[in-house]
Length: 306
Image (cartoon, rainbow, N blue to C red):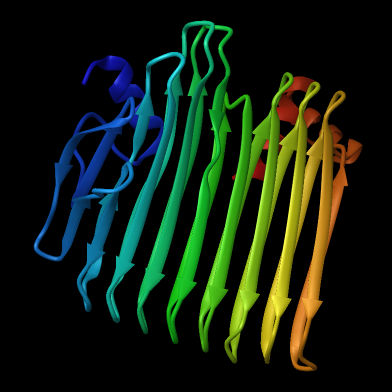
């Protein structure tokens, strides 16, 4: 890998340099280029479509899997299907994400379809970061899809962050939850220029005492537009809480479309949304500490998305 590759990996993962801990699979320009497996985690190339299957043995504790994607080829449209099979009572970290470097006029795109199948008592923390850079006029497009299937007593915590430089994205997250399961999602997005970002979140709370909590934080500046669309269906005794908070600047636009469906008298579902500009008293407070207006605005945005 060259310096551009390493820089992209550093943006979307927790590494410095080229050293990964645990199992990993690195995909570059539509092809797998490096892979490592462990005694408890196996990674197998799919035979029918482009992608990999990741198998985590039952009772595996606190191991890490990295599956980053980098694109440096302008005009590439990359689609990958990755399936995760998490064994009973396993507890693992999975770090994914995609970085695109585009210096030319053709669009570069990555669509990653990830499916998670958690057995009873399994726990996963899933971290996904998206990043774009480059001097070309070609767009950097990322369309991640995440499907979560949770069996009794399992849980998945997902952190999704769009760092910067992504011109267009449609982010779809869907979950089906059985008894005593928990699905937590934290999303952070910032857009500028003419960028667009759309989030679609759908979860079915089918199991007794299943729960989900979704928190979306977003900032839309200049002429960018964002849309957050959520649908939570409670089919039994369950709990769902969806929270969408956004800051708009300049001519930025944010649309929030909530939908909650209670099909059971014991389904407890909540949706909250707040969209607005940076409060004047917040700016004044920071400016009295010596920051100028632009620095104060950026400090508020950084804190909001932290």
